[in-house]
Amino acid sequence: MAFPEDVLTQDEHVVAHLHPHWKALIRPVVVLVLAVAAVVAGLVLLPSSGVGTVLGYVIAAVALALVVWLSIWPYLIWRTTHYLFTNERVLLQKGVFSRERRDIPLGRINDHSMNQKFLERLLGCGTLTIESAGERGQSVLDDIPGVEKVQTMLYEIVEANHDKHSLGDGEMREIMADVAEGKPLREEPK
Image 1 (tube, rainbow, N blue to C red):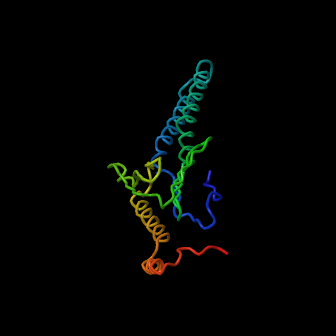
Image 2 (cartoon, helix red, strand yellow; image 1 turned 90 degrees about the horizontal axis):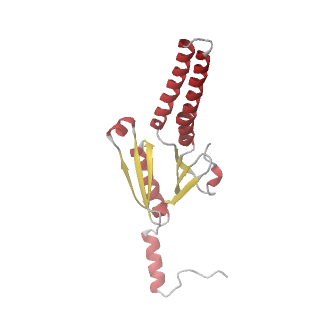
Image 3 (cartoon, rainbow, N blue to C red; image 1 turned 45 degrees about the vertical axis):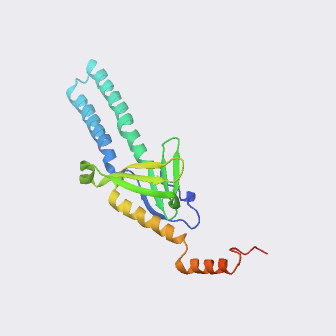
């Protein structure tokens, strides 16, 4: 369930790899504890013969179904949701049986914002919205742990990517001087 490293390009490296905040696991843990408590209470309180045994099996079956539906499945969704920030792009991947992935190149990120409700501030998580150039527009990343730090980190890697792909003042002067002298911008390969 770890994110496969083979999706990265040769010079690409991971800056941050996140899952949604652990608060997404509170309800699954509560359901698991309540289901175990119901089964134990059924074993202790119900008679050990006849109707009590059948009722005990019914309680155990319902508890098992609820644990699979409300505990194991949400855990698998949490575990297979990846927010990967690299020096070249942001990768968003989710899916247990099928997989959905979105790559946002850093050069296409126009804006990013974060939002925290009161409870999210207390728990140290929030929502990060990334707006990119393209037909899909905004990507909303819910329950990002340490969202303030993640937004700052995203700003830094977007700026570093922009600086890496932009011309400096000296390079721009050289190009302008070459254009003024009538030299071609690129030399043709021979």
